[in-house]
Image 1: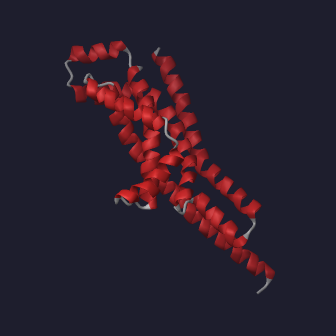
Image 2: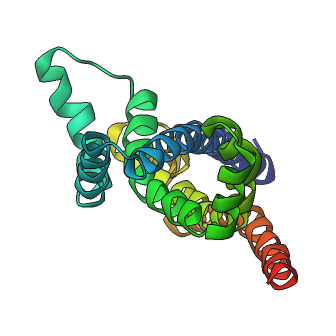
Image 3: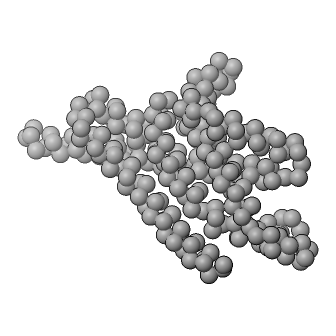
Length: 225
């Protein structure tokens, strides 16, 4: 077989493998972010609850998960839980571990955004006699979103990059695929360079969207204030 044909075949193999790894990385990012959003809202609302028990539970949740290494949590879920008869797939472990870790930070972002809603808006809610759910959906949340979305967007970019940790629990993400290709083919400099570019290509659109939204949010705040 000609050298050029061998080179093209190898390049095609590398491209297919890395594309599959990138697809797994994106799946983990999307699923973990969905979990982050749900848990973050729930924990943030619990921290603002008038009930002391809910506030206490949410505070412990946030402080514990912010104090635990994401990698150690992944190892615990993947290697220790099976000792107690609880077996999770690598994908489930990755999504759960990253979702729990980032939800602790997301809860604080959302809580701060909700607190930033002006007292005047809260007084208007009471004056108009809105129910709690209706007031939150129609007045409080729309006012909080400009404070909430930029930091949550930046956190999403960090989540995407942190998914590389799941390669250590045998999940065939982009980083794991890169390391396997190096074991099989060598070409360490080439393959890690391509992996770096792949992460940048996936993260840059998210960073750009966050930056654009921040510009619009800043203009909105100036017009409002």
